[in-house]
Length: 375
Image (cartoon, rainbow, N blue to C red):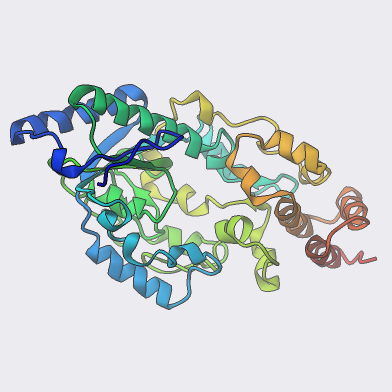
């Protein structure tokens, strides 16, 4: 890592690798053990260490990209090999510290019932509390600074679902879980309801044993997917995935997929609900991940009535805000089109149609057509 100052948000600290601390194998082993203990004390639920060899995962990623399954997510390929080569992204990287943080609310199983109620807007459980990027980034920075207090300055950079980082592949190598057939990371003791974060470091720490796969012959996640986006084991076509359609896609949702969204207005958790390993899911200990009342299981017509100011106020500090007001309304319009016909639904659609921008207008008209009440 080249010599630079820590950046303004304190998420990296690079030094000349030639001046790195000289530590014995025994000292490095003890430091690795300490890092895991400090991570738990700071609030993470698991910590592991891996090298940066992602050659096997690179083959899988390139095959996925060659099929165009990333859709409009151009960022998945624009950084070239930096995504699969940590030392190219951050020069001097020798190891990656991966962390896991559980986010499941206490009533996670009850959330399945919400999907059956077409009057309610279903929001993926991860997005109901404070934006996890902010929570994990602060904790990762704190862990890196704790290491620095112990050994002096060293090179590091913090990531939380940011930059070209293959966090699931790195976490798998670090022993935090295996990548399941639905492409989420799974752990046999805690399921999959958790966030991941990383610290790239220039320290030659001992690495952990990679996790082994325990999906076996199970394919419940493949069978349950509303849009059949899991086109094969370990292969998710993002262009069909409801999470992609409601979050990443900026334009119109394909007409042939709209009815399959049901009442899912932000993300989708179906593949996690049916996964047998999630019977071991751990309730989060982090207060910041507590679901916010104004977002949790609210009536679609009430959410659709929000003004842009109300949207910004009610989603402040959450991951939801990043999709923007128009995409939020677009998603809700589709779900209203999938709801049972009643006066309140049709009235809400017609009212919003009066001031709708072209993208939203298209989806409202589609929804009204489902109720045979087009104006």
